[in-house]
Image (cartoon, rainbow, N blue to C red; front, side, top):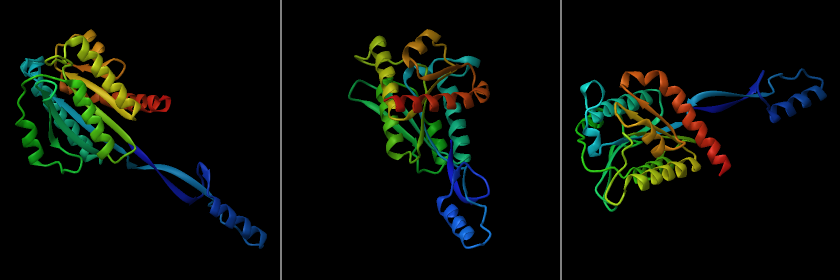
Length: 249
């Protein structure tokens, strides 16, 4: 998530500082000793990543997951850890929860918007969420990617979906729902949004997750404490896939 800063008049670098090089030639022509700092060096000193975490709070995540806790509790703890770490390292981060009740009632609940501070009010909103209703996941992904594009404010954008992958609603049957989720993820990546889909503690079959999330970066994490080692490579894979697909598009 680090962005490049360019420093002029350096003794070494990956490009020529045109102004400094011209001044050096003028000094040589006049018989003076030129300044040898005629390069531009690119260094990564600033954060350049916005992340929107999309938390599934449909009824299916109320089921018991690994270790006796519900899938909702496990994915909620992961979302809390993710936004805390990302906020502390200086990334722009937002968290939305979602569930649905038919085509005209897809509800996205802003737990933390991009410009909100991460404080006790955010955590109170997060831990007061209760699972219920259905999961029109494709619509939630489209809303999340739109929020990233309009309000992320960085060149690198990442959508992290925390869901058991059981996309279902009235008129949103499994085969159609899976195709819609794959389409929504593809649209997001073509717009330059990296997509990472995580299923934490759920017992959803691997083939079901593959059918729903398609070629987007996704992983099944049995327990939250196993996420630490995997999250870096998963983030990088999601961002690289979005950049590749955006260039192709």
